[in-house]
Image (cartoon, rainbow, N blue to C red; front, side, top):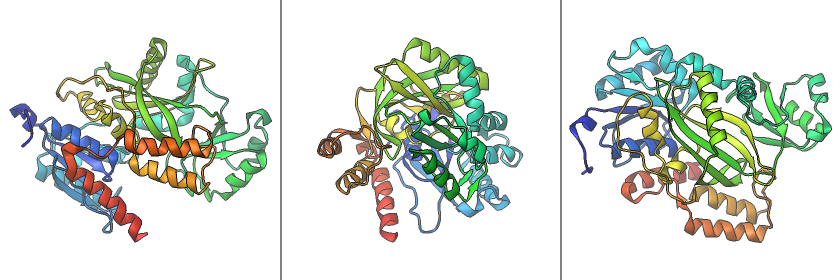
Length: 398
């Protein structure tokens, strides 16, 4: 039985659209723990496992090939109707736009807990983000937006190498990548030539061997900022977060983050990514994501309830938010992979910090026993087992 379920809570029936992974599982646990009846439209192929959790009341499958298709939106609509959903949310900006575009199809009493498409598309532009970041006074590294244009590639200052490359928008570069380091102009040109398609420019900035600062928060439909909290990323693997823990946020940076979200008239949850130079005192803006994402499950394991903040931004009432606990959270799966890569000498400069392999192996082993996992939860063993069995099945099939 779920504890402290009120009649009000029982009337809230959120549905999340996305793949079954740490972010969606965190949402299911958060909302189910509030006493809400939780549904899921799970984007999965036939070979992928079905979602499960003690807090998941019902789900339906949306095949990936039906996303952005008419019969796909019909699957979503039928589930929202049968589940008697009170609202729907997702973890992907393009799917959010797809749902917004078909608002008229859904039952009129189903709310879309999503920003307007205009806001989403503005935020998808890293060029626009950097423009606004400049205007609100955030520090930014020298930035280039590059394509195959030879003159643009040759214009990059030599002192800015090595460069860190990132897509300006997800899904606009093929083969896809998250982050890549180019040490010389020749390496940069070779990498650009290896991309079969560059629909939107690639963002390039000087590579900085620094930890990340992640700032989570939410903005309500009335323009109020709620739940702003900073987290320090002291270890990265393959260029993304490996460990995270709560930290303090300076008042000036907090004000600039709020002004940034106000400029975009953002609604819902968000998280900023910065590089932090503790010695120099600088904090460099990288980007803002207006969605649930890679750090959602990790900060939730710290005690920061981003999934509930996402709903509070749209007027859904829940229990009082707690102060995050001073603990380090990671992923056992990522730690094991990091250990294997260290053992087989496959790490790159994107794996932070740069340290001798015996020290890295020791800290990774220590983390396997000491760090809180972002998925395993004694309160939802069913959800934990379902996720990890799914991971093992996929790896076995590969």
